[in-house]
Length: 195
Image 1 (cartoon, rainbow, N blue to C red):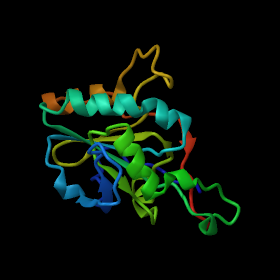
Image 2 (cartoon, helix red, strand yellow):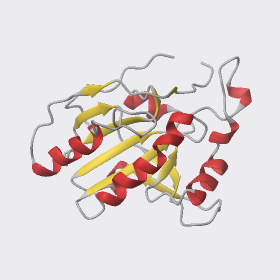
Image 3 (cartoon, rainbow, N blue to C red):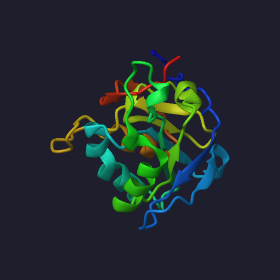
């Protein structure tokens, strides 16, 4: 399925999704999060998953963004929309490790410091136009999109020279315009359910 990301200046699509926070132990307890639960001046929404090597490579960088901006009025939320159920695949790829149970275990194991939400219906991924994992969206205090795409310019994280998400967050917090609208995200394609 081909989806197009929302346009710069567009409002963040609303969501209400179950999520885990990685409090240091695996549990099936969860909280429900909505867009309105995040009231920081800058909001980073990252579509990611458990199985994709690129998403895994970015886990620590996503955690670092939340940690570094924790006192700077910015929030990070991650959403996993991948198909995890075989009966929904009908020839499409599916990854059982992207189930809510496995998300819960991953959040605990990796000590995620941000909510990790499950978009089982995939409606939120479609609304945002999430093309791959990871795919980042940065919103200002009015929840208007200022940047979407890659987190930075190095998949493996060894030679990062451009930090697009951090620069966009810095611009939002400073009240400045961010001159880069979009950098194509890199990673595994979103695993859609059969139509």
